[in-house]
Length: 230
Length: 235
Image 1 (tube, each protein chain N blue to C red):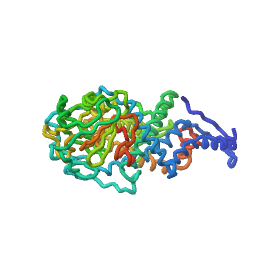
Image 2 (cartoon, rainbow over the protein chains, first blue to last red; image 1 turned 30 degrees about the horizontal axis):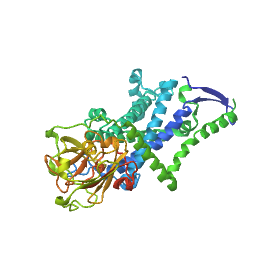
Image 3 (cartoon, each protein chain N blue to C red; image 1 turned 45 degrees about the vertical axis):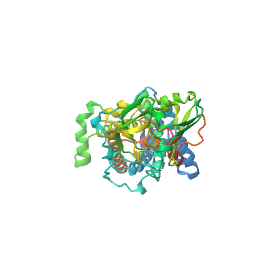
Image 4 (tube, chains in turn yellow, brown; image 1 turned 90 degrees about the vertical axis):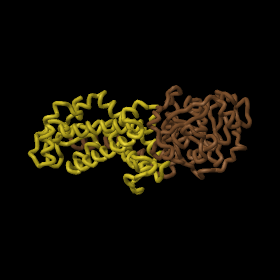
């Protein structure tokens, strides 16, 4: 699906402005609901982790880290579980809606990282992290962005799969087995969360760096004068 | 198109996102409790629907067992409620043909099953233990339980109480456990009889059983459930 492009004249300057409908409603809606759900899942997950903050034996228990209660959601283990077992459905539903829409509408081409993107990752990374020259922008998402977002979707899927192995290690015994059993599934589930939070941190930094016009596009769908149309 | 129209369109697009605000209901205290309760109930309902009666929990080799002394003792109140073994009987009531008092000998006369299964605590830790006892399904047959009844509830010497859905109660790995590691159950682990339910989370495995009832109505759900934990909590 080709994103819709419109042109109009600015009232103030009279200059011609191009705008692209980058983010359809489903993408924006699932983005924000899923972001909220992710926040709750991480916060309540850490609350659950507080009940046994270890990946070793129960006897003797060696705690890995004592996550502060102030940065956890639910107040106690039972409360954390209530939030976690409620928002996981919202997290999964928005994830599926997003994936279904992207595939059904073909909109995924804008964001899916494909083998032909590989060679352009390094120049972009050099630009972002090592002050290298800025490669020309030819598409809505540059190859590095595609890599980041495609990985984030993969991590989202992994968070759900590891979560099911922790929640239902008997009914989903094949999943738990793939992960090395319940005990390891819990480790993976925890690690996947941190990688996702690391992605979110990078994502937020990039959002700040790219300014208001870019941020606005995730609210209204339209982006004015994107570089790749210049 | 002119800019005015574009701006109007932007506002419309922004307004289309207002359903997201519905999530704010979770921030309003009087709404939060029923919403989370509904979420938990939905999870329990889905768990019950997905539960497969013929699907067995993984069993483990003897070499994978957690040493007995490292099997945690988790009582909600006391480790030993002081059951007097000589006088102990299990009081059976409800939708059964043969209600009354059942001695340990009657339970032990049923075929014995031994299994090495994982015990997962709601806190997140897990151990592998060796459990021995009679299948609850065999005991339900012995007492002539109504197979169409929905629940089996138990009460314990330490005033703990629990309930199981009938599908789980009839599961072949659900035991009335009177042995751990091939030895008679110790007091701390729930002597003389406890539940061992490898398809359920730890707090469903009630210890020091005193009463068992087959019923269609849950008068009491479970000690931890009443504090806000999941009722079904099937693994």
